[in-house]
Amino acid sequence: MWFKNICIFALKEKLDWTLENLEEQLAAAKFLPCSSIEPRAEGWVSPGVEAEGPMVYSANGFWLLARKTEQKLIPASVLNEKLKEAVEFRENKDGKKLRKKEKESLKDEIYHTLVTQAFSQSSVLYGYIDTQRNWVVINTSSRKKAEEFCSAIRSTLGSFKVESPVNQSVSSVMTEWLKSQKTPEGLVIEDQCSIEDTREGGSLKLAKQNLLADEILNFLDHGREVVQMRLSFRNEIAFSLKEDFSLKTLKFLDGVHDRASDLFTETAADRFDADFTIMSESLTELIGFLIKTLDLVQDSKAEFPALKKQAEAEWV
Image (cartoon, rainbow, N blue to C red; front, side, top):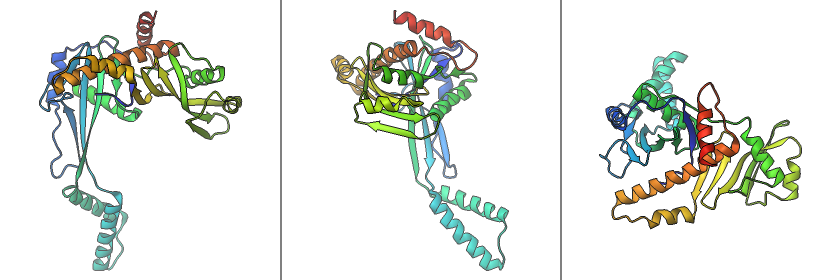
């Protein structure tokens, strides 16, 4: 259980339901596979190693959830080919061109027929709620998928208000780190970044490069900003920080994996617990550090400053 990407949200209101309440609500919205005529199905599944285990995996104040989606695979090329054949057959039979509405109706009929014959593809999206710090951390680099995950919780529970922590410009902070060749203690600039020209458009992606080389630093002197940068934190986690405060391509380094390996485990469930515990604790350290370092604030009306204050207190 090691997240590869994370999108982070802050709860705008303190949780007013217990673990038991959450377990009950998620069980009522449990995943059921697609029927023969359904193109898509989604619902909650057990996030642990046992398929019929609890719907919430709880450890040290972290509540892990899992949302499963099943989608029937119907390639657009197949649908269009079948539609073309059907249109040609009807037009030859009737001796006249089909109208637009008739083609659309025919396309719907073909689509529903293909659904009953299609293979399906499944995926599971994981996310956890940090009940002590009121964070929601979701294992995806897609802001849209992360928002859909939170929306699914909201739909299941009736209320689940979150907001995105943003800065006046995370991009400007990363640009200044690179230009000054200085980062907060604990962060190291690695060898990848993406730069955008904010005035004339265009972008530049750099990989396996010395980002502190003069030609790159000079490039930043003309209205260009870093929108994504590869960093490492305390020799424990390497990640790419994006301008929207999502973290991509997380890599937990040897120190973190060694701590997980040091924990005694006998079963797959023990191993899952050890990995999730070490991962969530490591991410808490990183997220708290970044919140304080980037001076994050809320993007709307509510209570993110309190969360920021808590993060600062933990990093005194």
